[in-house]
Length: 346
Image 1 (tube, one colour):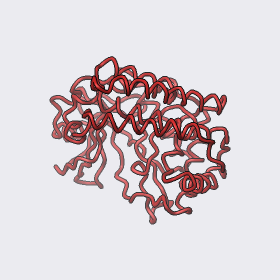
Image 2 (cartoon, helix red, strand yellow; image 1 turned 60 degrees about the horizontal axis):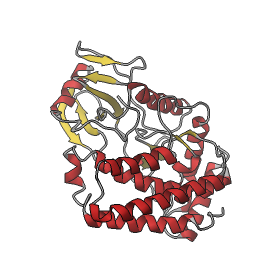
Image 3 (tube, rainbow, N blue to C red; image 1 turned 90 degrees about the horizontal axis):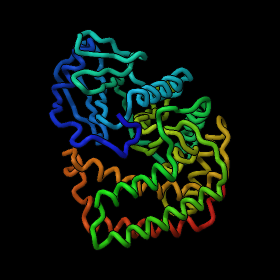
């Protein structure tokens, strides 16, 4: 296994069938009723499974070759720390092997059955958060502040960082080495990415030695369930599969959208709640567009590396076309201009 999502096995789910999920749950002592609903996930396979004697559960089948067992254990341990502090997150359930074909790790939350690794979660109901509402952003900020306060307490050992090397240089090098860029655009894309990464480095230099901490890592609205009748009401953060180390801003910038004025107001609302629980280093304002740029480059490599997974060509038919790469070049040129502007002031 590797701890970097830039290297994944070819056709990792070859031979995998949904029926294996039911068999795995049977081996772990769950009494399923045969209801199986595939949920929207590409990196892993995720299903809602009905039970005979309990509410449905959500089952994650980890992508083979992506994370090592120690890296998954760190994800689960981080979430467990958050639960201990009554922060609303989706935490894996305790599992018990009921069959000789099932193996459960020492923490009791990761099972291996039939060559695939499973985690089982309670089903959480909720809607997408209304990020156009200042009170919602402040509420989100409060819980992110609490998450980051816990994230600072210790460090990941098996999980890598979000930085210029892992999200910039590594995906660029992979795309070039594997001939992912059309020949007619290779020179333009290569020079544009080089300039973009130079500007990312300049943003990090202006920010200085900002602290890193354990993060959610992929904190967009799709990974937050909002429940007005929950206990407590408000957001529940789900899917810590991309948890990594990095600057606090990584979990904040994906909540921002629109023009500079709009993002300034949104970030002010987020920080109004965030700083109730966790200090925020204003030097990280230099990193908003730098982190966005790194994500754009990494995303292209993520798609390319998973193209042997049949789910990807079906879901992203536009990927890899000449127009796709032309749009990415234009997108990066816009990011270069944004990274040369002064940072947001909040």
